[in-house]
Image (cartoon, rainbow, N blue to C red; front, top):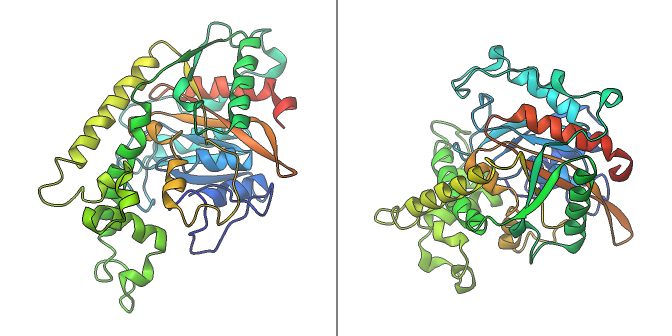
Length: 373
């Protein structure tokens, strides 16, 4: 768990662009391996942005499918109503090929996919030689205003603005819209996600699951224990500086007499966010946001301040709250402390609209390749 891959049982993962920095997380190992060309494709799990944020930090492509499109068989559950499996690749076309294979009926071991869909996503991608002069003509996009405001690094905002201009040059229309509920997603997500994590991980009690000769405190890492405690500890046990944040409304979420105050309210906020985003997507083909508020930061920079690390998920968690598909593609590079670091652009699509989303991302990638690579 965590947004830095510093809590892995396999030790710290480094960012190939600058080994002093984190690759993102929690699927940072997958993104780092693809960025380092150690493999062509890797799989990741995305609960609140764990594919897309590492893709941004490592300069690769990360796809989070619609919740329910792919089977989660074999995935160790963190938060069951959020978890998704998706590919991390070096190109959108590779992501489409992998998704085509993963979404075939033969791969649907459980009942997560509720509708029959075309699994040949890569066959619908346009060839650059046959591409129209304005390949995005007729497509409408929107930048979510709340994702480029205070708290977002100016270099990241510049990359989003540049991406919007590139889309307009390709014939697309780009508006700026407001999603009033967007800022509510982060605290609601952490209440719901850590509540589900506490429930899912309760099975590892060294009786039903886990080594019989060890204890749960020995088997779980610090980050896992922190998130469980966020749910189980009473509010009185937390420092006062933390009580003023929205995150800790979930610390008592599963307790008797408090589920209505916290867990139920978070579910209501989830519904508000879903209605807000899906309504916007009836007008627009895709929403445009950063994948992270900053480029990759230094290792150990946020380990002592978990809230700062949690707040880095503000660009991605709303997608998981709504179960929407999203893809991160390269948006450019920025100079930070004498190192060029990649910045990703996130495109959010309609439910089960992966074919359209991959087509848009593929066109954007091909037409901006010289500028973003």
